Length: 145
Image (cartoon, rainbow, N blue to C red; front, side):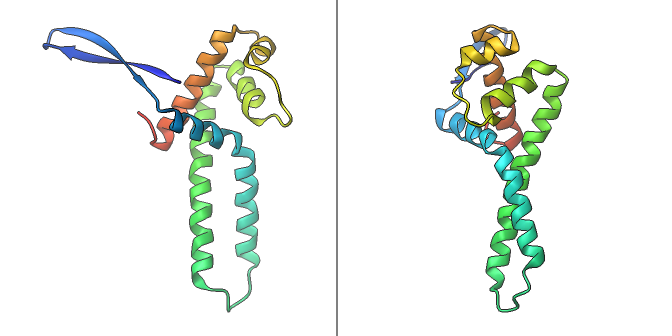
């Protein structure tokens, strides 16, 4: 779960903090999108090639429209993830390595402890990195603010 501190006005004078928790459904959805990022790029390429080479005039228009909508949806998610990666690049290599190890490595049974050791951070820092990445992607997709 990701906790985010929000400043609230109390009587117009004092600032107090409240914690807002991202629903686990959104958290899991964002993680799923991150895990599937490499496959999304492949799928976009496959669908684009299919549409370019589709020469069947009897093919229903709604099939083409459906594929166009699917490509646009996948492209939007890919662009959002790429924007977050670009922003994380300014934070340094640990974030890049974290994403590769946590989400894009095939046959990975590495625990968060193992990932933390590989990128030379504490386990708590690794969880904080994960939460920050998830929050940034969710915000970019408009799923969470």
